[in-house]
Image (cartoon, protein in one colour):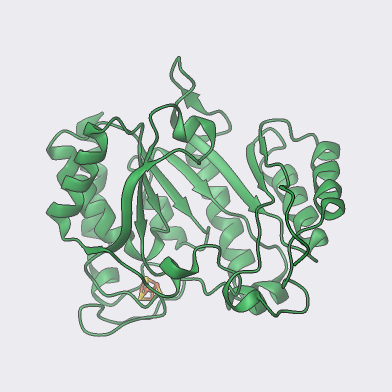
Length: 305
Ligand code: SF4
């Protein structure tokens, strides 16, 4: 198993050498040398992180009892108006810049602290560097599964080549409508790209979550969808696409935690929180499609803003 993973990592790094020199690691395909200039993700070559810690707020098979070993990369290849993590993704607030060996040591330290997995958060623009560091970590004894926790705006060839390297995919499915992908995330091809990578992730993992006796995931796919106010139809179409093209038995995390962060604060449609009626309508639709596996977040009471 370890040898298989190392072989896949070697193959990945060789195959994508050119794509990182003239960066085409994500669908933006900027073609820049990130050691010298920044592409659309706004990040250079050496990975910058905002934190590396045990996290208990992921889905139960990911956080378990001991926590998920999250490594939050700064920057992002999407530019969501409402990004719920905008200080990290758009203000690029980093605490450290890491090389291959120090990122590997960060993973090993998380494993030593009892993390159930290494959870790369927003990794799409640092995937090459993360895989290189993973190789070094596996050489030094990293054995826990790897989670790829992504917006779902990834390069399809990259995702294909992550087979045998990533154990658990945790992608978003944000939109099916091109117009809101443009308006909210500046990514007109998000729906097309996102659908293609979800199909590939599903091909690799299948439907079931392979878990240990304590219910901690070792391999699988969980799709996340954040319900955005004023966009119930988008949420319904997301659910419909998943049910028709993957399966209603997929593990689905439906999230209601949206708040009008950053540039969304004064937006006429998304400059408010989700209402209970909107969320109930989406949950009812999911129930009607037969979704039973996964987690539907409760809508928390909040003030009238
Ligand atoms: S990872 Fe960054 S520089 Fe590379 S293609 Fe994507 S947005 Fe551009």
